Image 1 (cartoon, rainbow, N blue to C red):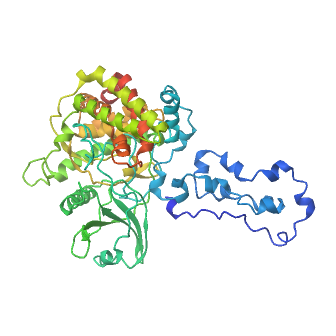
Image 2: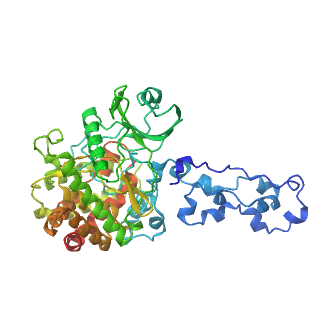
Length: 525
């Protein structure tokens, strides 16, 4: 697949004129041009292109005018950098690492008119929706297998570490992030010596700015690999990483599309160097697809794939607590089975509102955040009696199944990556949670027709009935109603990398509450 990290931006200067014309352009060629043409650099045409064209750093046409135009313009224009499109791109596109594409608007979201959700907001709050990437900002783009990625709208992360305010029990807020750009490069020479046939290092380039771990495209004399550095405190110990590796090796043996790590000369998959765990994976070519890019048949294949993963995990990991099972430390994740207490959520809302109002300088994001927090408090007051009971059981799940952790080749899945959150949780909830990420539209609503096709295929693959999916949909709705992980990142951890996801996450919770019965039927019908 095309890698934006490998594409060089075109030079900012004008291209050289054809031989024989640069030194002395004929006066009659330049002077008859209308002043409007001379005064308007070619980049104005580039900025009017659709978002996909303007955002593509590989488009040299958008970045520079045709040579004939530049040579016939007066020297003042020819000497000017012709491509405002290249320099006016957001930092994500200009820098070109795959992970930065994840925070950019997909073309369909960028081209969509303001949603009714955003239009109903206060003026400054609606402006925050636009400035944060739109109400439906969804990560898209391609990246290598195993690379950590920026979090998608609605992705339920792990508990916070060292947060000023404890997360609401029963929700799945994010961990404390590492630095946005951890310094240094991995010790590739030391690592490659552990592998017999990996070759000598030629280049090691960061491929993502993931929220939890770090990934590198490692090129050697023998080929290209993906090198993953595990940094997330909750999952970066050697035993946990090794368990993830055993799971992917066994799933691969069953024919599922995964990318297990390579083994070193001693048969190990985890290398500990300088106190950090590393793993070397094959480089997987592919492209990410969200639900908007999937046909109805593709939605069915997605549901079938996740169902096959869940049933295969039961086989390769063993039943929880059974003899010989490859169990997780501590067994089932108790927080994953609990449901949020609205009283805890009310206290969290009060604290976040205090932090929002104290933030200076106050901007449109603050206005939107306060609006959504007060709105959520009203919704919780109305629906507190719908709090679900704790889940009765848990099974092995991927734990983070969303578009940026699934690579496609054409219409078929090529690899499920990033197994860091492999663990014991209610399996049907993962199916609902994944659908809420894959099939969310720009305005924060779900594409229920696609959800229905996906859910039916998942139920056929696992043998789950409609009641199990309906109960899971209710629990995930309640989780969304009590969850503010993107605001915790901004106001408690002072990290803004999740800001662009907040409009879609908050809009989905409101829409889901209003369309509760329709959503339930889509999963269970």
